[in-house]
Length: 406
Ligand code: AMP
Ligand code: MG
Image 1: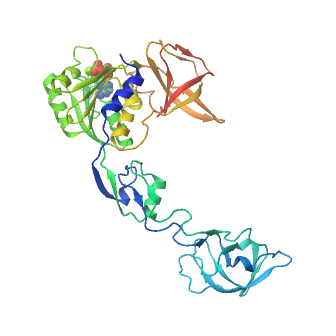
Image 2: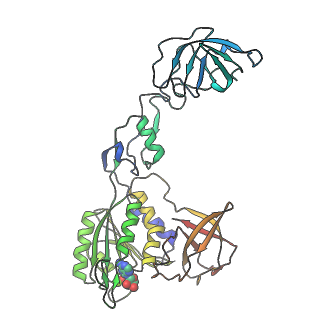
Image 3: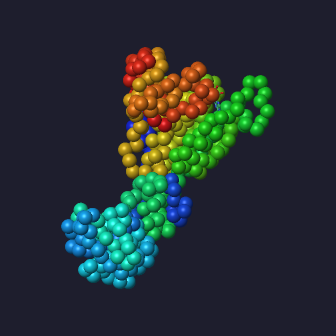
């Protein structure tokens, strides 16, 4: 049995990042992975503009003024945001100007409205600017035309959308989304719409994994329930590896009489790189690579085990596959445990619960109820997993514990 850390290394080595791109519109870009460098032929700000509602002046005109000795300037024009100023400001003159409006020629400084007094077509400046250029957003001061704005391999979220819009990128090259096939193996399984008969179990894994794939930017290809019959499983796996970049199956990777997955993968030419990992839950985990590049994850059937394996290991693989440039490391933090946590110390133990920030400290609270890998009920609302390393059997309430953020 290999360690979780070793499993992570092996899995990441197996995965190649997608190279295929597609062109999409800006409207569709949220959550996608950028595949091209972005730059703009325009400076940002596009032109000198005002950061305040106030008056545009010449710095040299207003030095030394004060509320006792204001300097009075003639207001010769008004520049609202969006207008193209057509008059230039000479010595002794000012313009009324509003936030975001382009500066007229001659104006080098903005006096905020609060430091002025307007009477008719004249404005009194009651306090001098601190420096020439105060409250001016200079053309190109945020970004110089032609420089790189965004690099490939980043995830496009709110702020990146704003940049892409500003750079007028109406269509964008992104990596295509990873295609991930999901199949649930087990004679006992039924769909949520079927009527439960004694001995049966509802296939919850299909839904859990589908959500996991969607949340991580992939396209789930749901292949449904497959009976524990080698020929049927084989046909489904052939279909899966020919249509998907990754395959996630649940069940059938343990040591039971109906656990056929490993044997079938080998028969189909899959190179099995992992068959069990020293973690709890999640010990049975089969990872195989096929010649067409498809990576197969045979996850344990127990609902908690399947998700813990996804959160700890498959997530990083999916990140790399998707084209994200990064270090593909899990997000660990240290928290204070609200409860006593225990393990038999033999495998790296993942305990589910909730992390909350309380008075500036991260507090991990154990999920109430049974920490049993079949207990999908108290897994709901889990946002973190506390980790007890091999050899550690107890972490007491109030002690620090390593936590995986989900
Ligand atoms: P297995 O690894 O196939 O032996 O399955 C282990 C346990 O997980 C069994 O109790 C199964 O009933 C349960 N299980 C397997 N597949 C699923 C599934 N798709 N949804 C919910 N429970 C499952
Ligand atoms: Mg089974």
